Length: 101
Image (cartoon, rainbow, N blue to C red; front, side, top):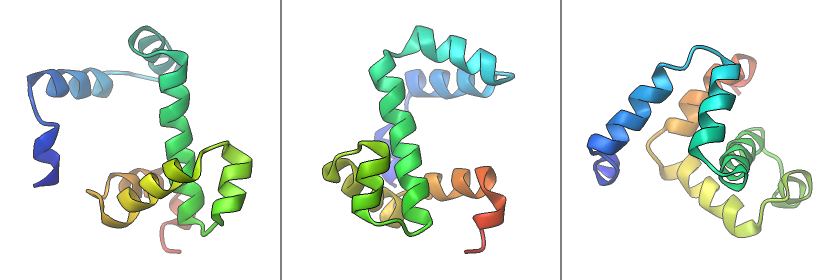
């Protein structure tokens, strides 16, 4: 299974820590300590790219609006299309009105 490549004690600990966060302010504090600004921005950008792909935006539009490279857009596209379903699950929860589209 694809997820087995990231499974392990340290990853479990990280994900359990994330599940303990109570609100956005706790998320900001935790991620500020955990990641560089660039890492956080990169993760946020990938999620936005996935959302824009889901609503059928073109690569040019995505690149112009997010600043993501075509390589990043392509990588996210592969994950959206052939990944473990994580993007789809989260995007359906964040944007329930778009879930059926």
